[in-house]
Structure formats: structure tokens, C-alpha cells
Image (cartoon, rainbow, N blue to C red; front, side, top):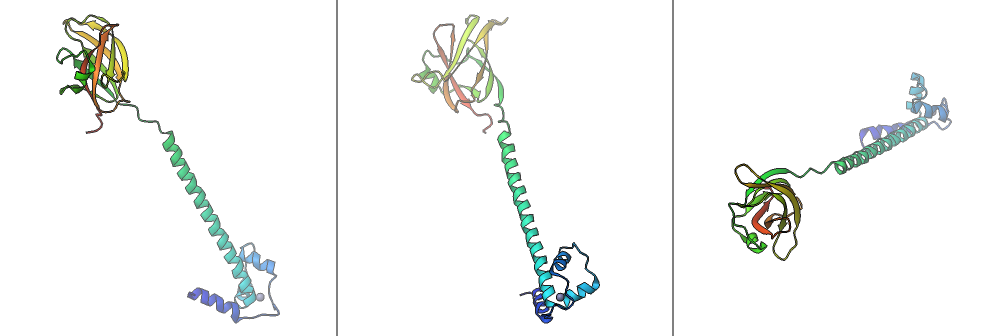
Length: 217
Ligand SMILES: [Zn+2]
């Protein structure tokens, strides 16, 4: 028991007033404790020198304090729940970051071209393509004609094309045939692949290709 409790206990027992001489009504006492009624100096003096009145006054004050604590903790809990909910909602509504975009050029005149995918997949010096949306400029092997071409990315001979796209190739003034296509390699894992190119329904020719995540160093 601390000193304040000890003084309270003392006042509650020090001034017994069994006949309630000069006591305000319990309602008036409660209203004073709730600050609904002003307490005159005489009433204050009475409360401090009448154990039954002091006990009633103290009980009402304690009740008010308890309900205030409950009210405050309820507000705190509600606002915490609201804040957590709001944070979760904000994060869930946050748009996913768009895939990175790249512009990459491969010169197929410089690398060996394979008829099958298998040799291309294991070739030691592949073209390197970042993961993301890639604006790919392919300089086709010498003598390639202008026109529509198909492009695909395969893992090896046993797997189907993981990605296909197509575009029109044009012959530049320097004689090189260039094919521009957009490839979205976001869904592909890092690793070695074969990049297939063919004109119309012609035969596929494959170049070694490595896909890597440019954001990872
Ligand atoms: Zn009294």
C-alpha cells in the first residue's frame, strides 16, 4: 500500500459518522464527484471529515477513472486496428512495379547459327538478354531477305517454344537485314536458351542465348 492509499484508508475509517450528520444526499455526493455539482469549501471540509461520504466520493471517482481507462484503451485498440488495416490495404493496392525495359541488339552475322536448339543451348559464348521487356534488334545473317520473320526462345530440343513473337525485317542501306521485335522475357528464369529465327515457314536457325536478371548483380 502506498502513502496515498494509506491516507485514503485512514480518512475512510478515521471519521465514522453513523448518523450521517450534515451529509449531502448520495446523489449530490455522486454529482460532486462527477463534477456536475460545484463543491463548496464547507462540503469539501465535510467530505474530508466524514468517512462514509469520503468512501462514496472515492468510489465514484475510481469508477470514473476506470471507465476513462477502458475508454482510452478502446480508442487506442480501435485506432491501432484501423492503422494496421489501412497499412495492409495500402500495400495490397500498391501497383506491382512494371517489368524493366531494355533495348538490346544482337548481330547474328557474328555468332554461329545452329539448325537444332541443342548446340545453341550449350554454346559457351551466348548472346546476353536481360529479363524484362526487351526491344530486340536482330541483324540477320548475311543474305537474309526482307519480310516477315518469327522469333522464338526454347530451352532445348525436347521443349516447345517458351516464347514466340514475330516482326518484319528490312534491308538497310549498308546491306544488313535487320529485324526488330519486342520480347517479354519476364516470365523466363535466368539461364541458357536457344533463340530461334525463321522466315515465314522456313527452317528455324538457333543462336545461343543467355537470359539474366539485370537487377541482380
Ligand atoms: Zn457525511
